[in-house]
Length: 239
Image 1 (cartoon, rainbow, N blue to C red):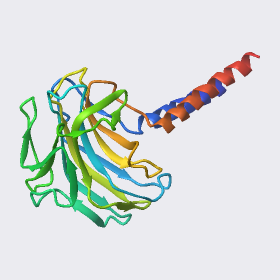
Image 2: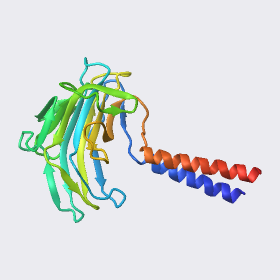
Image 3: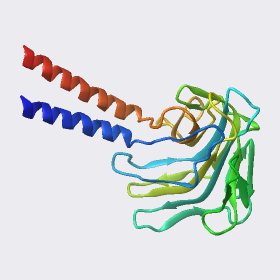
Image 4: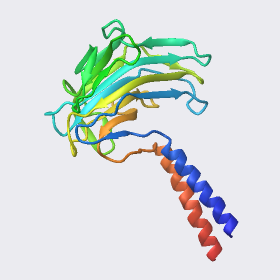
């Protein structure tokens, strides 16, 4: 009995850890900032090949008085052999190769509410700055929080990601607001049906307040199965 319970416990813990690693929001407090972060994802056989546009979003929540900021730099796409297929660190000082809506610009530096000054991460002096104003972002969501007004930056062209390809970029979220106005930022990509109208899939980047980790729905299902299995085993033993 003890051995069986230990095995079940290990399975549940393993599933829980897998769920936790799906992706994690970087949470900041009132008027906080994340520091530079690096997002990197290598496409696996589970992902399969994928073609579509990727984008970045920052949004206000419930108010339009204080505009939080998302900084993006050093965007790279590499094939399975490590060769660069796309590299854009905004070194031209323009948004060439991108389509934007809302308040989006290329800057040399940006100041957080804390007074911390952010500069480009790749040495070319420039980075993209998305300020949460200028376009309707109500179609995009973060947990229970719905965007109201913000900015979006899309790559102009679709990209094809094969197994082994890697997409990476540097980002920083600068909160210019306070909870419960939990402004947020996302990496966007079309959902699995290719429908770019109704809903988007996303990976969370930075936001104000809330909980620290938001597992993917599929991971939550696995977690639920593991917990249910543990409960069934206990019932059988009692019977």
